[in-house]
Image 1 (cartoon, helix red, strand yellow):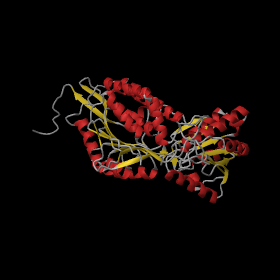
Image 2 (cartoon, rainbow, N blue to C red):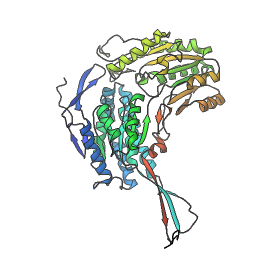
Image 3 (tube, rainbow, N blue to C red):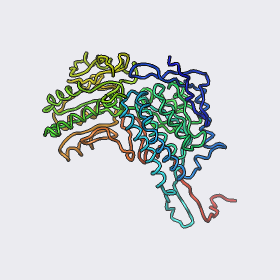
Image 4 (cartoon, helix red, strand yellow):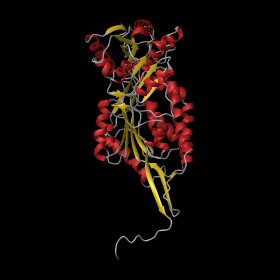
Length: 505
């Protein structure tokens, strides 16, 4: 036990609360498996209280936020961005300890969160009053306007707790909605901190609500609740399917981001010089192993032209073995632990099945030796490179969500495209080539929501993020991300009404 008093991490109607049941949960540091915080463990009753608060704040007697002028909503979002910058070091360290990533990764996440709040503030502030529709008569004023959806249920994952929350909270607030957010039960702390910053920035009571607790109770209740108008979920395919099923009877708006199995396609001409080869190898490592591979857009499938395969794989293996594993707050550490013992066991099972199915282990494939920066009880796993993989292997088909990179080869452009598209997911992918025509051609044929050319992982707040296939429905970021949190209304005004005389009388 931590010996710490449980935090009041449930926020509803402007008040911080314990769980109705009094239940709590210990939050473990994945670097050494020791508890370092205790949070409230909410359930359906806490969820109902939070939804009721959000409902009152939207269209009850307290419903001032939807009617707040756009300029004031934008100003609040900018204040939140400033507070995030102020607390960058504290939040970056908390994100590192909560999720296991390095402190530097945590700092970068906070920068991106601030960028998201500023982007949506600028986007709504620049909008006009609506789109005028020509009705063919001077006596008719017709305009299409956008209005908030209502109460939004925002369910976020454990790998990028604050970043993924910001992608939902910032546009939801910009559009004038109220919300209840449910962070992952194992990484809730920075989302709790964000709610505190929203309150500090002056957000009215009841607009922002949070319930910390498990998906089977809090998440399930949010998805089915009759007073929830929209559900936005980021997580795994199985849980996302359940969310969609629970939301369907209420015909709610649903946005789902359900992960990917992302190809990184490398043509031989991208490795024609030593510098180009070095860059492609370095980016393949970055694509697969940043945050220990716990990234929905991770380039977990290397699809490489046969003529350069041996040299490329040999260099990848050499560099993967040199990646420094350890606590995220230790200088020089490049990869932290996996988020939990359960997640590490899942990765180990995938690697074992791949070896049984004929894959060749080139690096990693085991737990590292303990060291002062890598405690024995931490959930560490070595960056793993599996060669001679093929589509029938589970490790190639299914999302591992760990530091595992598989290698497939091709000889022709058509074969490369076929391999890259041979997945039930379609979130992201990349193509590496020195041929500009080929780059555009292959990018156009890839069935993935984001395609990088000669790069991997960057995203822009201005660009929509989403996927094809079982990677989900809906979009985050960009104008489409804002549109997810709005309804469209057509207002038709007859300035000189006259009787129509359709009926006798």
